[in-house]
Length: 55
Image (cartoon, rainbow, N blue to C red):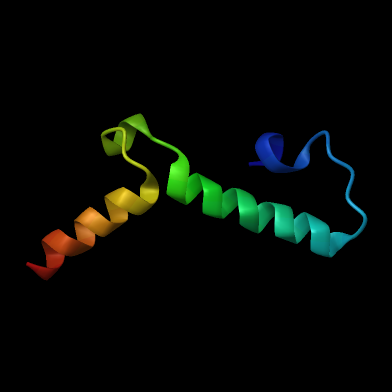
C-alpha cells in the first residue's frame, strides 16, 4: 500500500494521508483482480462467499 498510495507524494497534513489510504483501500477492494481469488476483486470474492453462506 505504501508504494501505491504514499511514496512519491507530498501531503499537506495527516488528514490528506488518511484520505489517500482510504481511497487506495476502496480502489483495491473494488478494482484489483487477485489470482488467489480466482482473478476476482476482494469485494466480488466477499460477496460471492456471503451468498454461498446465506444459501
